[in-house]
Image 1 (cartoon, rainbow, N blue to C red):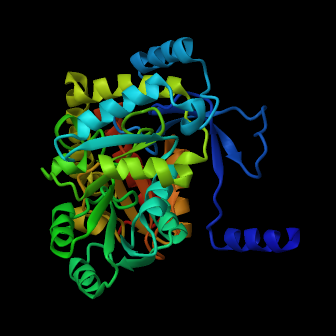
Image 2 (image 1 turned 30 degrees about the vertical axis):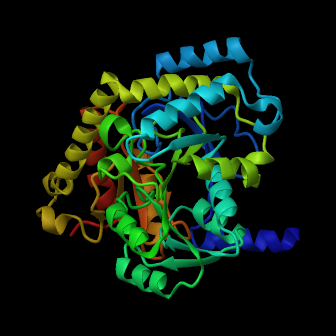
Length: 424
């Protein structure tokens, strides 16, 4: 076994595909103190001084993860409820804090989901496993966009349903699949904002197909909740949708800045999850203090401060897109915006996820290293997370970034592109 695994690890090294962890020494924020790579599950050398890096890699889209009001809310929650739940939700771990959080989430999504209730989870991964395994019985077919998050595919694999994929945004192909389906129940499953490309699902068209073929639409809104739509209600609000055929999963460790997740849907679906979702029934409930903190986070998201942070984030996105590739053309030796980028290009998205496609895995790693040498932390994302030939720098912006941070990023990207030979 050990020799086999060692060979597998060596092959990943040779293909520039080995994953490595970094150790952060500070709170989640744009300025991070980061220790050297942790190579094998061991603590890094304490003698190696951490570096200060400007990070463009968290999903803390609204910059709430280190917000003073949420830190105080966590302390207050710990004083009220302690630090652990002690049991699963169905034994004794379901606290008043959990119940109130679920009420708040249901209220937030009520404009889009009739007769809505919400169910809270410790992580988004658990929520997707619970949802798809509970609804995906032998009389159900599941249709997933090929670029969906891994947790959706794992949930579909664990379900008893027949599971199919359709090419990204291929509504015609999905329509043919639905027309040929012979099971009485059908689930269309999609990311709301695709995590590696940053583009939005065509949810209105998916809902129209669901209405035509008597199906349901599961939207994983991990990267849209808190950021998109009125009061940060997410992708359903962004598109102005309302239907009992919609089921929304959202995570609370990204824009909400804390942790956990939820499923919001018609009350009958939530009741069924409580009865049958193994990933809900057989796991310890998240700490009540976390639920208490999340209630404070939702108040920020829905209020004036949330609006201000979303506006600032939008301005940063515009500055990044407007500055690329102009910054490269203006750099020493630049030959104009069109020629400057070589094969590097930003994907077509206006969300906080701004992937810069580089190409090969080794090239993406070299680009990330060139940025780090300039004091910036932008991760290289490689296969199998993304398709072969589309390795990228996954740039994520936060409302905690400043306009100056984005200017610094653009300048560093110009140097990295030239170092990697991407410039003409």
